[in-house]
Image (cartoon, rainbow, N blue to C red; front, side, top):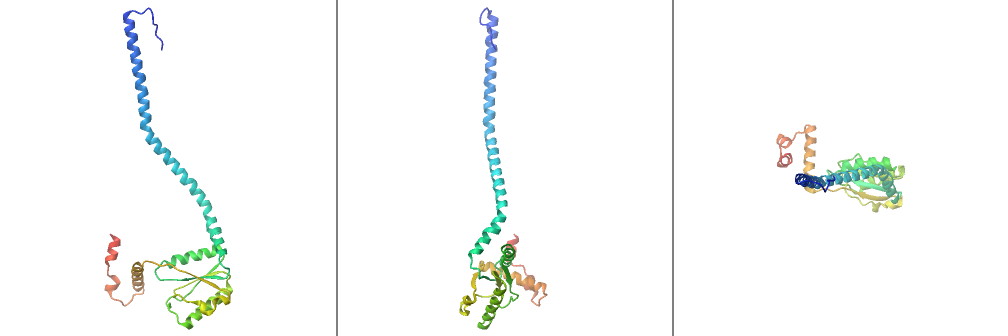
Length: 222
């Protein structure tokens, strides 16, 4: 806004000075207010920007992972199986209460995806094998291998050295896999499993053993 600089009486000069001072104060207040508001919003804007960036990154990589996951599941594992000798037998000699059921489920699912056969033994209570029983197990594996090109096999059984039966001469390359667990946790799990089975079968065990609440159970519940 312009103001004539000549032909002003003292009253007009005073009014001009007051009005210019008023405009200057308003301008400073507006600028300071805008700067203060902007500075106050920067942390929020920065947080919003960072949140949007992280969310978008997770979303994009999540989509990429979902698209790649079936390929990883089918091709990478499948290609790794081809690196194994085609006459291999994967033997899972299960240790009780060590996650064997979970691994068994995984093996069965992988057998469908990767074109191999999984065979489960129906013998659960014979882990320590005599020499004659070891030979019987060996002959079972040879028989299974004749039916299936690539296979995995599971049984609750202790380690058996099949090399003394000249396993390789039958065109079989055996590989052991297993899962182990903290021994104390394994015994605790075994105790509760056995007690639950006894309850279902209405065992003649004492009521104290069947129904007693242990300190371990109390600690878990707390």
